[in-house]
Image (cartoon, rainbow, N blue to C red; front, side, top):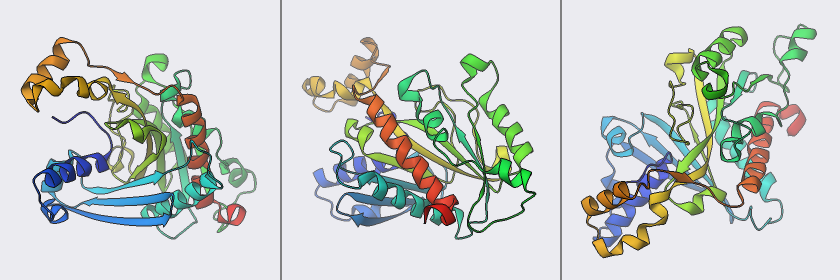
Amino acid sequence: MRYRTDLAIEYVEDFESAAELSGDDTVRKLIDGAEIEEKTYDEDIKVTRIRITDERGEMFFKKRKGNYITLEVDGIVDEKEGIRERGSKALANELVRLTGEDRNLNVLVTGLGNDKVTPDALGPFTVSKLRVTRHLYTIYNMERDPDISNVSAFVPGVTGTTGIETAELIKRAVEIVKPDVVIVIDSLAARNVSRINTTIQINDTGISPGSGMGNVRKMLDRETLGCKVIAIGVPTVIDAGTLVIDALSKFENDNDAIDSYLNENEFDMVVTSTDIDTVIKDFSDIIANGINIMLHPGIYS
């Protein structure tokens, strides 16, 4: 069975696991409609780049055509030397791959989520750490600066507290700012609990606000906002059903029986880790610094 996950890499891992069990050693060739590339920055940081190229890839990954980059950063919990700085630089490099080498950008960074609910607070926390410069561009009548991008930041809150559709608020902010790129930051859901303190996903296909919390809203993408959209997310929650899978071994991989058991026992919920406060703090630091490095090379070179 497949559990809910926002991470493209977990579909690959599920597929590789099944292929390994069947003795198949050509797994990379079996994923039609997708290209997969791996890169190692150093002993602690690995990147997997997945490019979905056609409808076959969309069906397999249940995601739109485009680029999905997974940054795995080991050692954050153990506070390895320089791990946050190294993670931020790797993230900045991957963002440049998606936005292009031109650093003269007008960018709107949006932090989705609810800062009163810790697992959902990644977006607001990250935005609060960005170097915002649009007001300087306005005051000094600047047009373009190769060292400092024109950066705006916006935290729209959640529909449950504002009463306004999040996508509509962001669309209005885009109309005001007229950015080249919108960067959207949000919490995600994972299948594997180890992902909660190691993984960042980036994509250029957009995002649905609240998807990580299971409360999907209107899509934020090029079609709805009229410009390139880069989504950055960190898994902060996991389906409860995944955590009890060991208890279901008696079903011997009977997927129908497993589904029935989970539904009957109301495991349709998500949970988070006990150290989620630290996770949000660490990853908001890494993402904010990575965005700052990418957008302001004259300051963070």
